Structure formats: C-alpha cells, structure tokens
Amino acid sequence: TKSPETDEEEVFSRMRALVSLAGKYGLTLYHENEKEIYGDTAPRCEKLLSAVEGLACVFDPANFVQCGQDVMQAWEALSPFVYYGHIKDCNAAGQILPPGDGIGALRQYLPLLAAKAGDTVLTLEPHLADFVGLAGLEEDGDRSAVGQVMRFPDNRAAFAYAADCLRGILSDINV
Image 1 (cartoon, helix red, strand yellow):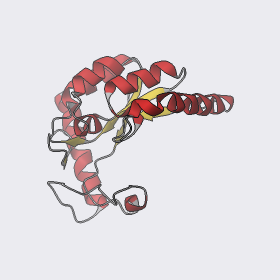
Image 2 (cartoon, rainbow, N blue to C red):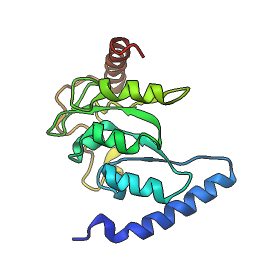
Image 3 (cartoon, helix red, strand yellow):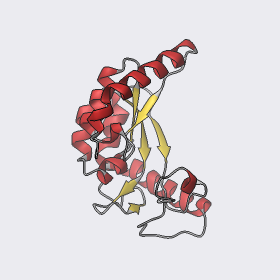
Image 4 (tube, rainbow, N blue to C red):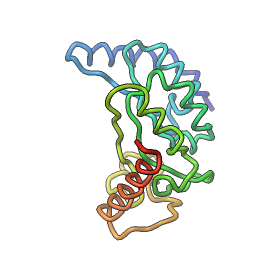
C-alpha cells in the first residue's frame, strides 16, 4: 500500500493551483485535517501549509484524536496557520462525543485560538446524529454515527445539545 508521502508533490501542486485560482477571485482556501487524506496529521498539515503559500487551516481536534495525534502538539505546530476551529469531540476510541466530553482538548485550545487575533470563528460540527447523505461521500458508507455514545432523535436536537455544551465550555473558560 502507498504511503501518503508518495503523492505529496501531486497534492502540493494541485493545492497551489487551487489557491492560485481562488486568489484571482479574492478568496482564501482552507485545509481541514480530515482523516484518511494527505493532511490528516499535524506533521503533514504543517508540511502542506508551508508548501502552499496562501493556504490557511481549519483546526479539527476530533479528527486529530481519531488519527492518533495529540491535539495540543498539533495546535503548537499549526497555530500560525489556523484561522478557525471546528467544534467536535471524541474519545480515544474515536467515538464521537458532545463538545467537552472527549479528549479533543477544547478547553485548552479554544482560549489559545481566541487569543490569536481579532475575531474567532468556530464551526459547530458535532456529528451526534446520522448525517443523511454522508454515505454517498464516504468510501465505507456513512460513518458519521458509527460508535457514537449518545443518540438523539434528530439532527436539530443533537445540534441544540452540542450548542449548549459549547456555550458551557466558553463560559467556563471565559471566552
């Protein structure tokens, strides 16, 4: 099987082309540390972001946990590139949990993100309920709800619960 580094130059070349095209329209592209892509771990994200001038970073702590990457080590490496953060959490087994209930270091990294500069942008991405349509996007079918510890009757209830959890975290850390 190929290692991610096998396609590294192709990834960089394509991303440079996309960033250049976006720049012509005054847009900025952002890379999220998604599982099972070249830029899933902090070292590869840092390499990509350093190699592609103008590419910024979305920081997803749960995805780092699911890749076996220490979240705060990832933050240290990537914070210069981070523009906004995803709010999603999970445990060491990769099971999705409400924000603050996992080991995604939300309470540690959010104050650092807020202190970076000006506005802080967060995207609440809880994955606490089945995401209809994801099965068509995922190679192995819909994995959004696999291993979830909590169940909700629908996406609206799951999102409301996650939003309440986030409000609690932000209140606790005075952000």
